Length: 258
Image (cartoon, rainbow, N blue to C red; front, side):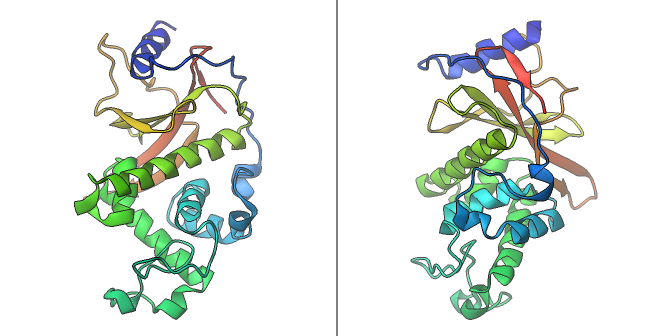
């Protein structure tokens, strides 16, 4: 418990302007995550649930992570054409925009085709990010050369915040109480880059590259599995790693486990 309190002290240093919220209850797992996306999502996203689950599982991604990107990109509308020509649910750039290896604009208006190509692209940037889930999302929006700019960073922030809310709903965390969602590489060892979404804040902030506090204790206990697995990835040399999110109750000073 000593390192829990050390963890709380450092995390609160990042959020010192905020007041603590009432006590959170234990996370209660449901069968929802195994069969569909979280009930957090709007019906326009829910209508694509079976396709989302199928494509996410084929790319070793959490379906709610994919759902969050779809909500950000198109609000679940399959026929949306973006201002620069991106198409459909995941705003995939078509062949006509110079992406000669991709389907046409008309083909990408098909939800199945769009989700296949969008999920493929998302899995690619997540793998390229080597565990940096925030910057991988920024790269999905504008390419790796643009990740430092405001637009892609707002894009990544919004997706991770909505994703955290969806996972919290999945496990019935109280909606009015405060938690921290901590994103990091989960396996084979817990490591950074570590990003934190606070339910009482509007941003997602960078904690650090290492899973250590100044006091020498781990931020995230090595023995604690994540609340949700976001992605399972393989490097070019064949080594594998996974990215996860942990939930931490601020007022109880404890980690929430399914």
